[in-house]
Image (cartoon, rainbow, N blue to C red; front, top):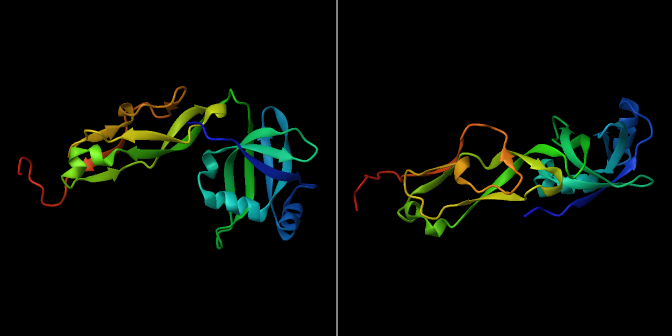
Length: 196
């Protein structure tokens, strides 16, 4: 269930500050910084088009990457922030955090719903109302799940699906202590209980 680790290629950025960042952008790169793991922060730059392609693919903030920088050892990183241009909504800076596989981290994981056809409530015209498309979970960096699955088998009109109803992957737990709602099966308009 864990997704494969994608390579993210970058270059060492010489110089820091606004001037160096602007020069990187003029040269077709997005400036960034890699920090964490009790190591000095490392300024980097990533090819603009390659980064934009990754961002458009989705789930960028919940993916583990294998950062490859020439002349340096490969390191696992996760994105902790992408600053964007306020007008064009295009990336202007990226923050990456170094991780080890045994590190625990809080991430938003996508929720997938299966067995719609096995739900009596949906068959009778009910509507699946999704409250949370993503759920924040505490996960191991080396075993980040691609998604969590909600089985709709047997769900009737009026049924509410809580986080406790979902079988979470081993080693993951919700970051919120309360039993929050993920989705429910809502009645169709004009539905009368007990009417055939």
